[in-house]
Image 1 (spheres, rainbow, N blue to C red):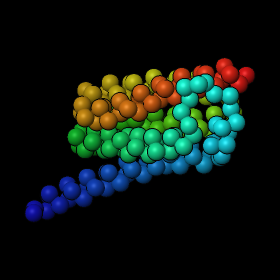
Image 2: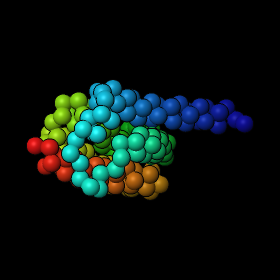
Image 3: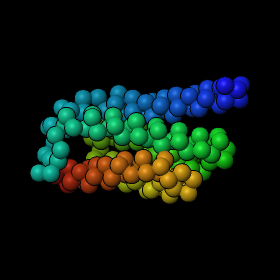
Image 4: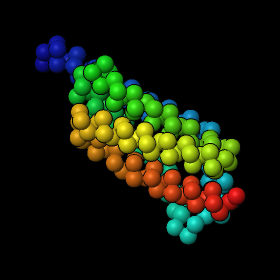
Length: 165
């Protein structure tokens, strides 16, 4: 193996670690700030179509892995941050918005404000998807389940806001 290949593989692995770390940090911030989300969720008046509380952990674990892989693929394909700055900027923005929603919804119990925030997340996520699709279709495709789940979560947030005013 040549030195360039070894360096490239190390750089790629380091990039994967960075994206995994960023997504893990966003998940951790949201999780810690949300406190006892299970108890809060169970105490709410929920629509009949609301999923059980136990489902959120496994779903988000899979989605977070896909979000990290998506960012890494785009970064690797672009050859760094600079060539993909707009796409990765939107990616960073959606991670921040993702981390902010749980404290608003579960911590502060500001369901209306959380609804506005998650709708902003949906818009930034759509922009991220469009920018990713221009550079790497698989990276964009990995974000589609996340978008679907986030739209579902926004609908659930709206229903909870209406039922618990």
